[in-house]
Image (cartoon, rainbow, N blue to C red; front, side, top):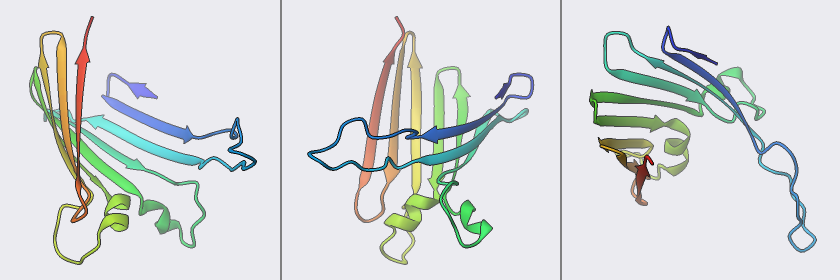
Length: 143
């Protein structure tokens, strides 16, 4: 669902609906079905697109508040027509990857997008804590 007037997007995603098409040797497994929900809102007086999401909301939990542990929050600042700065936080990744109680950037991500004529260059850094960092680079060409 999208509302251009209010700059609001709401999404519900169902991942891995169905069954495994081919067995591996004789092994046939269930697909990891997942339900995700997200809301994005472009703020009216600030060049910021804010996103809040929940993942794995279909998994059984003991308490209803446990459904909110797998949340993400992020934003994209539109610095200019050609530059976007992005940031995010993934609470599930932080809980799963954090190996020490020390302060670090596990679960946080940062990125930048540059648009030059028909080219778009995107870069992001995703912190996996003391284990590693993930660098992602994207290049889009409008033809």
